[in-house]
Image (cartoon, rainbow, N blue to C red; front, side, top):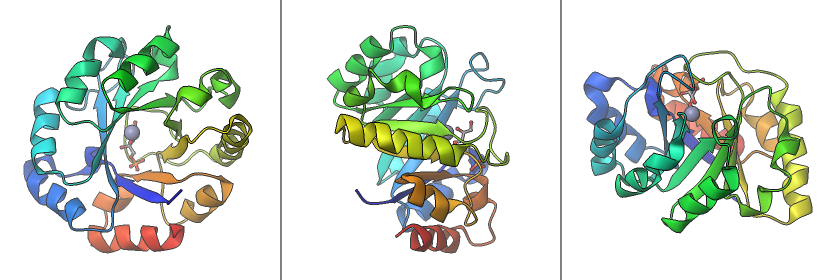
Length: 218
Ligand code: DX5
Ligand code: ZN
């Protein structure tokens, strides 16, 4: 499985969104990571469908949508229509997670589940075989620019073991506080998709910063 970089558009300049999307298109980045927040599941509101529609029009790489919303089921088909390729819901927001995962896959999208920092890997034991991706939150979801929670390394290797044991082809994504300081150790622990928001878009040269991250993880 190759190791991927997914710049988080939450940290882009929304007044220059097309410029920032083209930067990602022309960089060594692999995916677009799109954070949708509803102000209920998380204490922040990011952006919604019209903005995703505009992003999709220009994005030339995989669109990885991270839903930080309650009741995601009612929007699954909408996100598929808007061009999402991977749709990730939060474990903590889904009472009937198995049903939600099947509904995502039925649209043709890949299905992901995100875990908050306090949620143990073990809760995924009976769903892991159905998943295409698990997103381990390495910050509390809701905001970019927070510092990385060190316990993430342990969770990443626990998840890697669970995936190997279940012979699943599930990818491991890490989201929050990713920089050149922790990228290598995360890959060594078993991660293969690293989301990076403020570290990329806050850099003087985002294209070079993506290339550096890619170089560290390849
Ligand atoms: C946090 C979001 C992240 C965020 C990452 O709730 O899910 O994707 O954009 O941003 P950084 O890399 O700045 O921590
Ligand atoms: Zn995210």
